[in-house]
Each structure stands twice: as C-alpha cells, then as structure tokens.
Image (cartoon, rainbow, N blue to C red; front, side, top):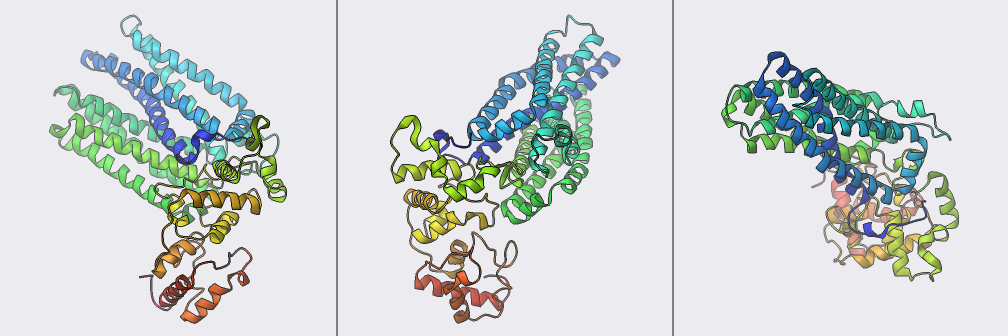
Length: 508
C-alpha cells in the first residue's frame, strides 16, 4: 500500500496539518460529548431529587441540542477524519486496523450503543419513568467515555515507544506507558470543555435563580476539571518517550504551540470565573462564547503538538510520516524508489516525463508534512538557493533540525523532487545580509546559539578568513555536509556575520 499516491492532496496542505485541523473539530465534539453526558446525568439526578421543574425543562432542551451537535457535527467530522486518514496514510491505517481489530470492533459496538441511547434519551423525557430516564442518560455517558477509552489506547500507542514485533502484544500495546495519563488528561479536558458549552447554552436563558445557581455549579465543575490537567500533563510528560521530548526541544514551533495553549487555558479559566461568578451581569452569549472558543483552539494546539511529537514516524518503529514502511526504506535507498512506485505507470501507461515524475514523487514522499507555498512552506528557502544546494537539501533531508524520515531513494529521486520544488517557486534574488544567508544556507540543519547543532561555540573567536576557509571545505567536517554552492558575495557576507557574532554575544 506504500506504492500508491492520492493526487487530490498534492500541494494543497500538508497532510499532518489537514489531519490536525479535522482532528481538532472532531476532538472538540468528542470531548464535549463525554463530559456533557456525565454532567447532564448529575444535573438530571439533582432535578429529580429536588423536583426542580425549571432545571428539568432546561436539561431537556439542552439534551436535544447536544444530540444535534453529535449527529450533525460530531459524527460527520469523525467520518471525514477517518476517510482523510485512510486516503493519506493507507499503510498506517492498515497496520492499526490489522493489529487493533478487536479494539476497533468494541469501539464501534459501544459507539452504536451510545448513539441509540442518545436517541432514546432525547425522546423519552415524557414517556420513561424518572429513574429509567436517568439510567439511559448514564448509559450515554458511559458509552461515550468507553469510546474515548478505546481511541485513547490506539492514539497513545502511535506515540509511545515500543519494540515492534509481529504480531504485537495487544495488551501491552494498548495499555502502553502513556495510556492512563492520556486518558486522565482527555477526561479532564472533556469535563472542562463540556462545562463551557453548558455555560454558553445557559447564557441564552433569562435572568433568574436557575441561571445564577447553575452558572456557579458549572463554573466550579470546570475549575475542578482544569485542576487535574496540570498533574495529568506532568504524568504524561514523564511517560513520553525520550525521542518525543527531544522533538519538543528541537522543533521551536511546538514550544510556541504549547505556550499558546497554556495562555488560552488561563484566559478561558479567568473569563469563566469572572463572568459567571464575580460579575454575572456580564454573563451574555457573546462573552460566554469566548472561553469556549479559546478552549477549542487550545485543544487543537495540543492535538497538533501530539501529531508532530512522533515525527519522523506515523507509527513509531513501523511506519514513517510519509507512509513508507520502515522495513522497506533500506530497499528503496539501495535500489531506488522509482522502480517500486507503481503509481508512475498506472494502467500500463508510458512513464511520465521528469516534471510529472517530480510532482508525483513530491506528493508521495514530501507532501505528507510539507507544502511548497504558504506560511512555513518550502518556498521560503528554495526561492533563494541554487539547484545544487536544493538537491543537497532533499538528498540529505534526514540531517535537518526537524525530524525527517530517511530519504527513501537515491540521486535520481532527489534530483526530480528538487527540480519540481524549484520549478514551483518564484525565484528571488540572493540575500545580501549575512544573517539572512545563515537562515537559508545553515538554518535548515543548525541553530546559532540555542537549539539544535549550535554553531556559536564551533566558531568562537574565529576571524572572517578562518570562517571563509571553513565554508570552502565543508565536506572535510563531515560527509553529511553539502558543499558550498552559493556566490562569492554570499560567502563573504556569511563569513563576516559569523565572525562578528562568534566573538560577541547573541546574534544581532
């Protein structure tokens, strides 16, 4: 299955980003469903014990809105996510399906139970006895949480280190190191984000005792849930693999994502307490929607971080992020990927030209993680470099700062891919400033002072001539270094910038 390609996703959006976006939408709906039904059960029991008809009426209306959210938004988002995962990563899906078949069967069984219970609950407020109706609500809550339990085990398996054996030990694979901390973290998220949804629905109600008392209870529940998140996150971090923690330190935008998520968490918590407890007169639909939106975005940042922590793998030790079998990668490197790429001659058609070959190879081997244009696209680097250096970046991509799979091919594949990238970007003139030249020529694999493979210590005290001599003989340092292919003016500007920074503090 790693010999096929899916052209609709070529050059549109990196597949990891696409899955992360769809995963955010589905994850928000799924977590809301888990937490909302447990909270609905507790409030329904309170309404029955206290014979609070006003609360019971509000719960009936809210449960029907929750049903609509699940069936109109949650289920389609889940199906779209699963379809996207199938067509973009067929080998990963095949591996997970074959090894977690019984887990998948149990998941679908409980999902059907959950959906049926939701339908019965929403239509039995008048017909079922209070005790029976409450049990149906509890069935919805338990069914939703068990679905989360099964999905969490599979997701954490993709990230957690394990020695791949065939067949895998299902029990050890499912109950991996991050399974329980991940489950605690997701359950806490579920209760928190569900309380924010109920606060949003409550904000449409008229002022009165119901709105005031229920807002206070929901706020307390959200604070209780959010209090568990730091401890669950720390537990999760201690159980995460060393490779994933190294990825977090190497990939700067992951640190930015987690900082942004933390900031959104704090803002959402503060707004919730401020609006629903301290100043309830400001508790309106618009103000209640802001914490909910922040929480959804924060969950999305966390999901995107989780996706990239396992790089360069999709399933650690089994499948790379570009859906290449780990066991076959060495074969591709020895004999070439083109000979195995059946999508280059579908239906017995004659082999395409180099332009089409390069585009299709890029789509298969690179587009799962990279786009040519757009923010963070390859155009930012490739528009400023020559053909030889572009070839070296592709051929030696496994040495870059960001975790990259081994390049599954040889010089022919690298030349075709680099040629396609260069033909797809608008060429810009070379940079004049040494700092910019460093970012393009050295930045893909090195940081200057803090980060990965830092160079400041290597050039400490070096003058411009020493640096220039080093740039002229890069291959003597290590075989993985590409030769200098820039202009003499670029080399001079880069040498002067490095020497000026090597003897002073941080880069200017």
